[in-house]
Length: 385
Image (cartoon, rainbow, N blue to C red; front, top):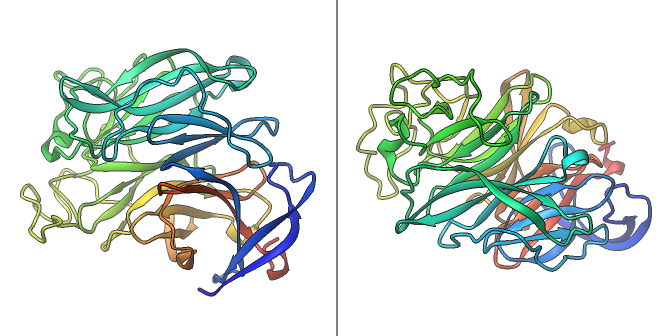
């Protein structure tokens, strides 16, 4: 994909685009016209997730070493916010996802997921705190969920947070690279869990009355889930997870169902050997993936596009790729994936998070020691509007 850098008068980085500023925009060819990429903020250390504050107040960005920052409308980074919990910042661990409360306008609650150490190992923890009015920190941070037991030596924390239309909080978890635990209902590894915003378990969760099972479980048999988003047209939760060597997959998890790992997989071990527990690509009693990549792009972050700004992207799903160093565009017909295009390959960046901004642009985080927050759109002159 050819790339072109142009210094032009464009909308500034405020989400409302109410003023103009001079900034450098790069353009990359795509099937639907030129894709524009603008740097909003730089100097982020392994950023993991972004959330948009209301009323053009900026964005919250997590950095894996344990920092939460505000990016203001001019792309300036705040000092690290106070009140953020200590994190296990080893290997893949650290401060991970960030999500605003559905009633943020009233309660100002911010939810964080992070790796937490205990008894020599680590697991995924979720807590919430009130964002100070002056954006300086989180107040009264309280843990509402802990992955039990803690089994990670530094990898496969998963960790995406999504509120559904009824206010339940879904937490997409990894199996801590302890493969068999994804099938163990008495453990929270390799599970999608569903809780109330205060951490209590809903009475209608599928495992509430199952003897020996954790009542938080919504679905199981997952590997390392690093993407989750609500489908805006159906209201259903979609998740995606890393396979091993091959077999990254998208699922639409249904209550109480088994999504196969490690019994069913399209992948093999990184050594080239089969997964010891695997019985095939599909196994009776488990659900096949909704969509699968036989060759793993290393997926992370996902966002459905339902904004009006770029009609050509309507009914598309965008997913970041770490290994493939691209932004994956999946064209949808209902729930069916009909086309897969790789965008921004020439950017040469590992894409960690993808979010749809309130301005109709996509916002990406690049995964590196000098990570960036990027704003991505379609060039209007090429039919993007």
